[in-house]
Image (cartoon, rainbow, N blue to C red; front, side, top):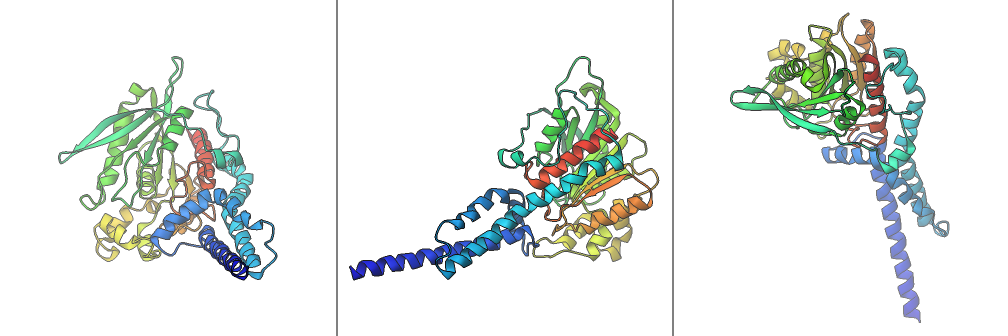
Length: 399
């Protein structure tokens, strides 16, 4: 009997230790929702924590199981679990706070979204749908066709065209070009395709080009490719029932730099708007103010893209920076940038917003404080919903 009591006591002690250790580990992971990630791998984990954390919060609350108050280690475990649950849920709470003012902010800057491209495909009614956080967002698949738009030194460059459902009486629809990211060295045109399918469902002709990558091709190769792709799409717009005079560009990360530069240096009024999703707008500033190199080698990435340091190729840095080309005719700009982005600092978009404001150009900066680089990876997550809502309203207003 004594041996049995001893075994039970040991097992209970072991369970309490495991329970406490699990609660502490859960708390440590949850902190990635509120503090910057210190390494590249933890940054990748932080995307999951911030955009999927609401799935984990109920697990943390299991520590409320009856009997938590009996021992000190159970009480500590409960405290850790409650703090973890709060951290996991904080992105949703903060997203709901932003959602209260976002529609009015967008309308004040860009005007009312006066016309839906497809009357039978309504815009989202609210910036964040709590149910969608858990059940996901329905994304009807668009018809996708691939077109070769250029050949560079024997290397073919293609773009994907996402076609909306077409009606015989429908007038030509706007064009939206989506430029992928990847530090100018990796990435593919079909990265994060949910937004492309969604916008095509709303009625836009969506195009996503490939472009030449570093290290084989430095600036301005990628910019030239995006310009060439845009020219081809506009030239063949009628084939897809698209309007070549109503164009918007969207880019993520490095793709945002390309989209901004092409939009800001376009020589006619066809480009009505541009969306930068956590993009670098001033590459000289980015080189001079790098982030944590354990998360991402920002300096090396920029030097490989531009072919050297600012001291050696300073004019190239200026030529590659959309920030330098803001002027009285700059198109409407939507900026989406996480407030704790460890790879491209939110200061990039803040400085661009200030410059746009100084020139009286319409713009909005959506900067979720919890969000990191890649925050729109989860299409139905807090940042994914906010950014999609903002993009929908922006395109409906400017196109």
